[in-house]
Amino acid sequence: MKKIVSLFVAALSALLLFSSCGNSSSVDYSLAQRYFVKNSAEGRVPGTISSQALFDEWFGAAAVMGQGGQPTEIDFSRECVIPIDLGTTDTESEIEVVSVETPSKGKITVSYRVKEGEKVSYTMRPCALVVVDKEYAGYDLELRVVE
Image (tube, rainbow, N blue to C red; front, side):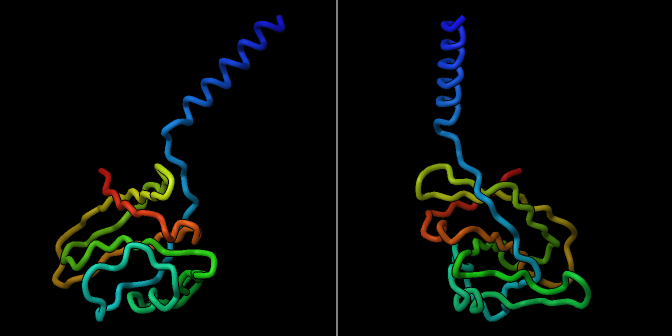
């Protein structure tokens, strides 16, 4: 009986060890709401923003009346922001973050999908702001569009 239990434990340990090899680790994140890319911002938004000053260069707050109408507070002493910027478009577009993972040491991957709607008579600059722990600020960033 002891041999069977020992073999079972060894097999289970080996299975767990091999199943974790090469897998990505999920990263806790949240989405910042009620911000927009400023009209004065030219070019592409930086890949990772880790200071309030840099954030304020690129983004403005869009508060509205009512409960939940204030922009999400971001604590740049503990957090950084990974913007997903689609650029200027005349098509209604919604960004849905699918996952944030670290596939290898020093690399972070944000996977997202874009849901496109109808063409409109004006232009907009759709973006999503992914907030993660500041430890990821120096990581190599990959933004990946998924279907």
